[in-house]
Every structure is written in C-alpha cells, then in structure tokens.
Length: 63
Image (cartoon, rainbow, N blue to C red; front, side, top):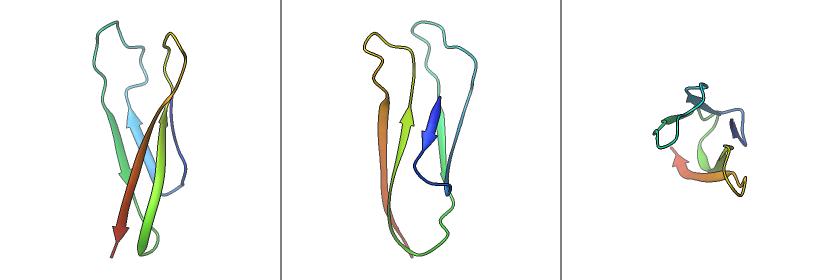
C-alpha cells in the first residue's frame, strides 16, 4: 500500500502481489495548488520481516 501526506500528491503502482526478488515501480505525481516550498512524505507499506514502512521525502519549490 502507498499513502501520501497531501491531496496534491498521488502515487500509482501495480497492486498485484510481488514475487520474491521482483522489482516493482511506484510513480509519484504532485499537482501543487500554490507557489512556494513544499515538503511531503510518501509512505510505502509492504510485507517484510520487521514490517517497517519505507518513507520517501519529497521537497521542492514551486514558482
């Protein structure tokens, strides 16, 4: 499962179960509603030994 911290950020990914050793891609699209700096987090939850999600930070400046 993939979640974002803002409605302006969306993730696309293949929702089918991955096979061991298989690589899956996650696409992230941001549609800013205003100018200025942004700092968002995308959280990727997956089945793992320690069950810890991966958090990806996205920072930038919209002009």
